[in-house]
Image 1 (tube, rainbow, N blue to C red):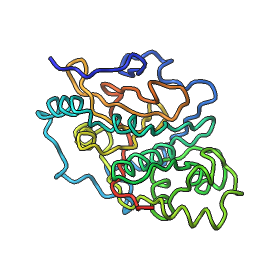
Image 2 (cartoon, one colour; image 1 turned 45 degrees about the vertical axis):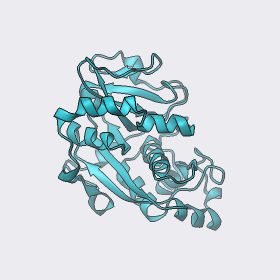
Image 3 (cartoon, rainbow, N blue to C red; image 1 turned 30 degrees about the vertical axis):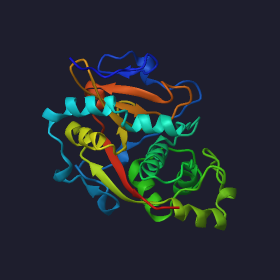
Image 4 (cartoon, one colour; image 1 turned 180 degrees about the vertical axis):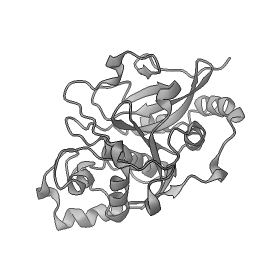
Length: 264
């Protein structure tokens, strides 16, 4: 029976995980606040399109498709490792809610064959929060990325919550790093999430149990069923930032995927 190969350094968070697997290392923040999200299936309005039924992949195909992706080394995690795209490090900021979509933007740019550019979550998060280190949720971040873009980290450091970087030159530069199309998934909908990952589309996923948002990158198959590989924004966590969510822990309470990035 096929089962995905999981690195010994990848934590597996499942319904019976020890609490220490869920908590951040010292000096690592979280900050997701889904109390700001409404209770409907689709709460992003015109910022993101609802998931179309045409993208659904039948569950009967999942295991074979995952096996093929792993055999051909064509997963997003394979692309990330080959390009040496580093994981995010949100440090002590409460900006997981903007780190995750920012990293998803970096991944989709790579997937579209664009040059690798490391983008600054704080260049959006700080302006959204009026330069406060506070939590949030994905809609505000997506709207900002669509309208204004993200500044590369060599011009605005990743965690710099400081208005001195909001120069006219940086704000103009950010427009080259916009993601203009997004797809919203229904909360806690495994079929939609797996369908996106099987199509190699990264998904920014938020979890109430964790008060945290990360990026889902791969579908995996372990213990006879589906799970997801995520990339976290905590320094030193997992294997190059990768870990596994399994069971009910894999079902996001908020999920949105970038589709089209501007060419810089």
